[in-house]
Length: 407
Image 1 (cartoon, helix red, strand yellow):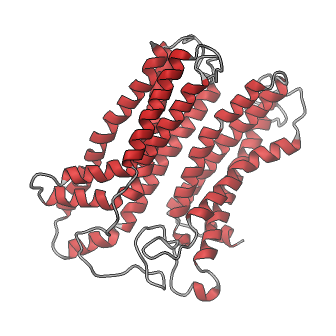
Image 2 (cartoon, helix red, strand yellow):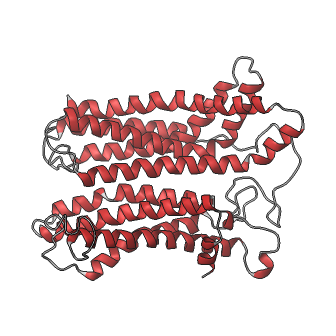
Image 3 (cartoon, rainbow, N blue to C red):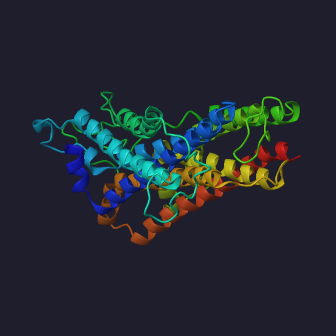
């Protein structure tokens, strides 16, 4: 009930983010229900239906990541003076955020169920009623337990992940449910003072060597599997039967994990390069900001890089790979759109969180005489530096991933 009251009284921008989470949850729920419809219409053999279900895990993971990012930026999760006295401490606020996330995802799952039943022809009186009766096995009854299990996956996983991300921590200098990484006082307010132009001190990311190694291993596994696997043990892409050995998809997974792991280190390295060779005020501010924000924005950037490279490689595979005449089906397009939209929205949400965490430093700089034009130039420099680093990296990884499959 508290989560519902907070949702009703939230800022319009907060409500918009929650509606986007609901929309993403609806998309994943619809994909899961379509997989169930395919399984009902093709009971034997069960392997294709299981593979379709496995492919749904990718948009599900992207949706959960987006839901957690939205929960972290929710103003209702930030401790404020006096809330602990009425029983709303960091632990209770984390559970409230998890409940709000579950509420948004449940709304999306219900919308997915209504749309699915409408396309099956079980609900009438709307446009496109029964437009996919054959595809969704309208002649067979839906098993209620399976429908409930599939539709509860996103709300349960997203709520659990949000509660885990926002749980209170007792270690000094870590986040205590405020949505930022800066240390806080016992009453939940951030400390004051310090050098205004500097960002909070943070240890340099240590995952860059491991991320690079994991990416290289993934590309090597993909190359080996594509050249030596033939058609045995194939794990087909949607719309492309028997186009890629299972080892190729395992290589793609390792590559994506490596890019996500290397993201913070790459952002930190980008900040170091900006400050090299006698930097001016703009480059110094931009570089120090990137170093301070590396832990927060690095991983979402790595995930977006992995997603974009995977989509570019898949598009190349669909157009020029073996069996390229097969169609790029609507469900495949929906899944790809969900993954790209959720990862991009997660990055934008984290960027908003970073801006909010940097607001006090920006105000202090302006009070001490810094020109607003200088701060805007520093922000533009940060964006251009990240684009100059991650855009070629994304294209290079996509090209290396697609070359063995199209050769």
